[in-house]
Amino acid sequence: MEAIFEFVNIDKSDNLEAFTQKKLDKIENKYDWVVRANVYFKRDENQKPNGYITEIRLSAPGPEIFAQSNENSFEASIAQTTSDIERQLSKRKAKMSTH
Image (cartoon, rainbow, N blue to C red; front, side, top):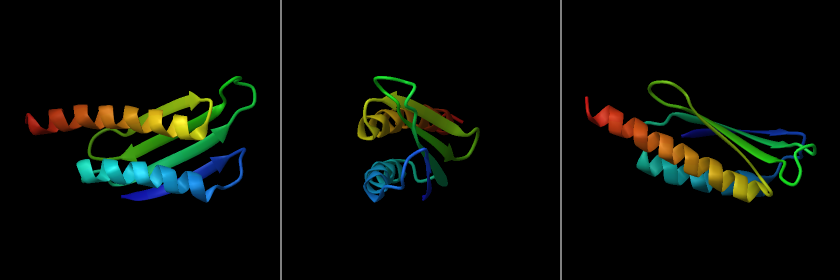
């Protein structure tokens, strides 16, 4: 799966990319039909105490899969977002296999 990382209002971080890529690799091993992931890291000072936002858009057969979370650290935000993505992919896979 191709992963595209974008950083909004923060500096580029290789650590965040590596951490996210590790999570995405686990998803790719389970769901090999996912084509691409667009990952956005945003920092919003106005959303206290949180403000660390991660968005993931997956390109896969059917409608686009999207999840977003706003936590108190990027690591927590990434974990929550990938968990939401896995839940959606599981539902999609169940629908795909029943036809």
